[in-house]
Image 1 (spheres, rainbow, N blue to C red):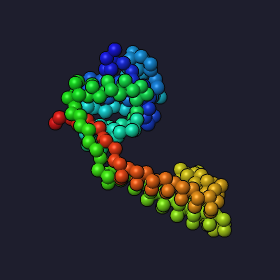
Image 2: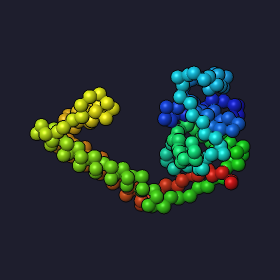
Image 3: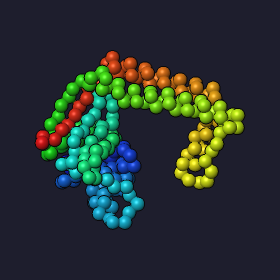
Image 4: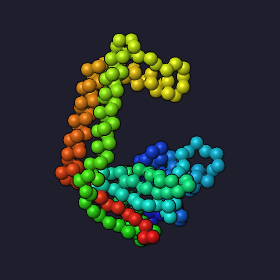
Length: 210
């Protein structure tokens, strides 16, 4: 069966099924095992299913790193704004067929190139900075909670609930626990930065011809 005539099982953000339509990639939550069931749900105006569409002519690039199952589709969203979708295939042969479909049916150009050390490590550098910030914030917040000086938001707003949840985690860990967890995550992130900088992976990329 051609990949354009079947429902493809994927793992993504609130989506588990993919169909390669004539003009767009159709993504939907687990709502159909057959193409008929998928289309029936897709065409419904009122449905609880999550539905997203990526038109082929809006795609800027599709990339996948060596050793990673996940690929990223970057495309122009509403009003031309940059958007992206990350997903992985549950069956390896679907991934290979998807690549062939992009090249033979949609005219995408495939390139394979070793990433530069800086580009390879960049995502983890951001993660390290965020970890250090959260560790410092959590440490001082744990001291404030322990001394009774912390001021919490009142009510049931999303911000208030998020703050109470965050504080409950900090209280459970304690001051030393926050530091130990922050150090452990920072050490792992630093190791990944060093590893990727020393040996950048090969990146496979599909780009439209125009």
